[in-house]
Length: 118
Image (cartoon, rainbow, N blue to C red; front, top):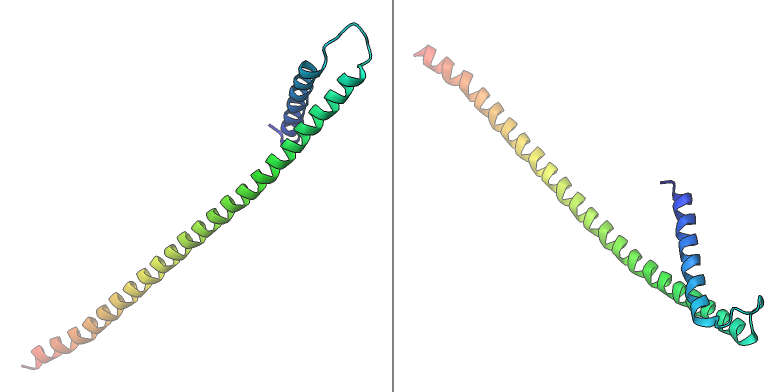
């Protein structure tokens, strides 16, 4: 699903829930089209409360998510460092094996020549 469409859907869902919640809490009398002063005040307070709560919750979420992301990055860096160290160790081992093979190859022809001379 497109992220903009998803954001719109989430916003509308939230808007509808807040509207329903505040309406059910604040509106008692459906006999008039206009809200009474007390109902209007109640709705304003309800929406303001919800908006503040939502803002504080999002701030906390951002803080926690930032810490989680930092921890993940640190773990990835450690893992990359371990992989690099393993690769370097493998390369050192390969180089040592090549050196040993080269030294054995150098010694082998000399030994063969010595046997022929006898």
